[in-house]
Length: 71
Image (cartoon, rainbow, N blue to C red; front, side, top):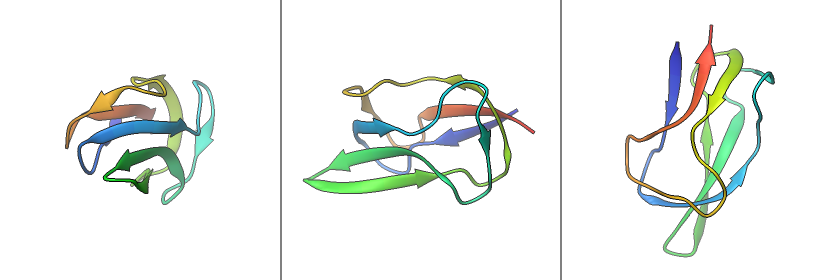
């Protein structure tokens, strides 16, 4: 299992994937908003989405798991 983690604290603005989606390395999976800036979070590795651990409007901390991928 590979977790895509938040790269900073912020609010989830968009969730771009759902369970079962195939994700390629470098693909945006979540967009965070912090200090009025939109920051996309990319998957570091390719895989299939096993779980989405956040929803739009959630506040997340740096390093918090956002999406779980099966390799």
